[in-house]
Length: 102
Image (cartoon, rainbow, N blue to C red; front, side, top):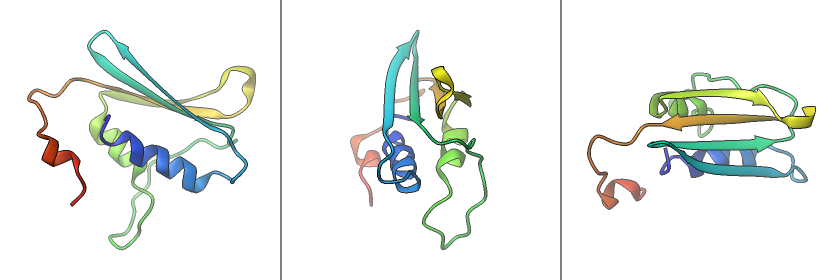
């Protein structure tokens, strides 16, 4: 997930209005990596199938494939929502070359 988090955040930034604040939080929970992406949007995101030529629409599919668990919750105070994901450690280290875009 850490290597995919920028893509998820980028998706939020692309979809959010220019004046909307986006907050990203990271934490270690035991041996799990937890990430949260908060915004003031009113809707709940949903996973969808993107066509092969579409540049957007795969963020939650990536999260679903990489995370042990994930979900969406309303933010405290009732303004906006956040998507959270809990990722287990890799069984083997990922070589740095796998993290750089082709």
